[in-house]
Length: 260
Image 1 (tube, rainbow, N blue to C red):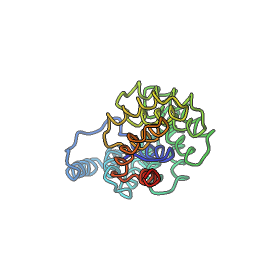
Image 2 (image 1 turned 90 degrees about the horizontal axis):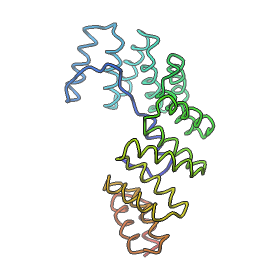
Image 3 (image 1 turned 90 degrees about the vertical axis):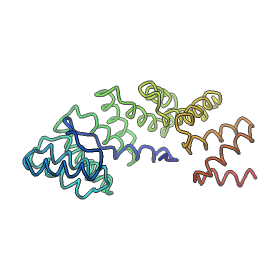
Image 4 (image 1 turned 45 degrees about the vertical axis):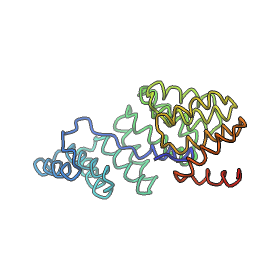
């Protein structure tokens, strides 16, 4: 699912839950996976990793209360289980308790000062709170600790867009694409920035690539339509707006009304 605003794109990244270091091989069927993971917990009720793995599965299935219980159990058994506190933070964030979430993320960092994922989540939390300085500081730490994660560069690039530091944003989107050449959101966002800078040829190239990678990328069609309008290609713009509108884009529907 693609989001239409910069902040929504960052929010989408916030609730990513990372797996544990030693995942057990389980069935592909969700119900069977839970049965197998529950069997592990029953067999060894003092193994924090078993609770963490089952909590991760509950989280993936949207069973947040059960996931939280398992993460809390894991953290109670092993008070230095940084990944469990990351899971707790993600549950609190998804449940609408951001302050409790950042407290859990901070606990994870205090346990493991090199836990890049926790810094990343803290950075996203600060961004949503409109604390640009705090967001940038924590995202910088996450990238320094793990410079190979394209999502980190993408999210920092979105932060730079929000602060109108377009050169820095282009650099970060480019790094994200370099690490993941199939990153359609990064092509979309870089194309939008090129459009803001009136570099229309480069904007179209990136938006075309985003659509090539994901033909159902509604937002990419909408922004390509905006570039077509800027370059006086109304026919192509209308075609893209109709495509976006058919996929439910309200902005596209409004523009079509104005154009017609």
